Image 1 (tube, rainbow over the protein chains, first blue to last red):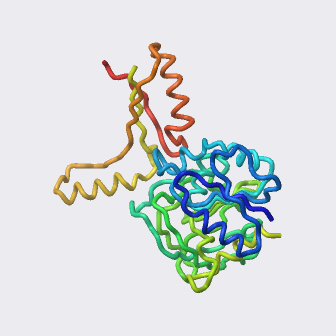
Image 2: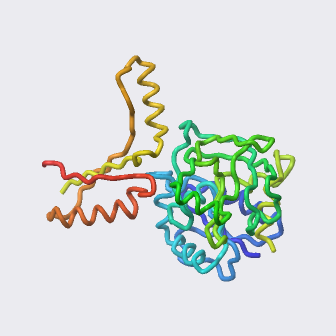
Length: 223
Length: 81
């Protein structure tokens, strides 16, 4: 599988993302934001974490107009698989590839720690190797990760099984670190080819570094 | 001409920054405050003398980039020069 990882000014998780997918035996290419085309044969685009354009104006507000994003939006609209992690998730909502918006954390603090996540839906590529209700231990690192969507939008998300992950405690009970609506940590689009989450599965691929729960998440993309 | 864009979170969308500042003001004994909402102000100097045209252009700018209309409202003002 060929994974294209987009790199914007201020992106800082591209090397971890590349490392994670290479460890899973995949080919990975870093693609600079000024490129207008994705590499030939791209199977999955990953928008990695970081602080694109210094988070100026709003997180990911400016990144969505980078030349490469036009190609990513076309790719997604043609059914291509796209995963947005953290700042990448923010880009997907700013670009309207995913519904809703991202707000400042309710505590106004930047949160950086391992946080348990509960699998809400697994009838999708990304979480197909996880069980519903399973608790995954994945690091979070964000200041603007409070997911917002209006009531109508939220109902639609649930109806289509688009709510993928929620924040919880170690036992799977709701625990909301950032004030997200319904403690939502990750969603997908209606067609289930565009995925976004605030936590960092690419930072949880080796047990010696705290958790390898990210492996089965990323493996979902590898047929 | 100068154009001022004020952006704030929509009514009903919780403003955590405003809440934190409200809390800080209360601890400084400013007890008369009911609510604090924090927004941002963007001041544009644009090459356009027609106010109506300028407003149309700035509205497009707001919808495309300056505001996230899922959670934010904006107002456009023309300050007296």
